[in-house]
Image 1 (cartoon, rainbow, N blue to C red):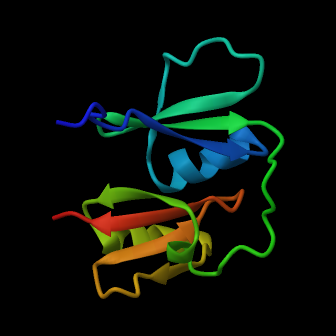
Image 2: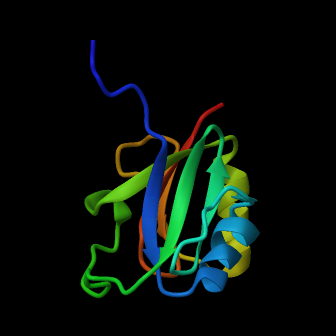
Length: 124
């Protein structure tokens, strides 16, 4: 049996918490969790089912330019969605680019305002 049982959260570096929240909360509909401790930098904890995404407003040590256009060829977090069509409609309404999974699965890849790659897999 593995010592590692589950994933608790994924942390993503963002340049502007408010701008990131317009995507994560506004477009994706994630909720802000109140239990974020008083840290010496801005950010937000977001609920994703029983898991979390932690947005950390810190200087990004990684290059944002030159990343693959298709997020499936970059490091990314994969999230389950109940309707890929609804997500596509939301992304289209905001003018946000995405690519469909090249494996033929009902999935798509997009990037947040800071270039973090995200995969969304339809889980019906």
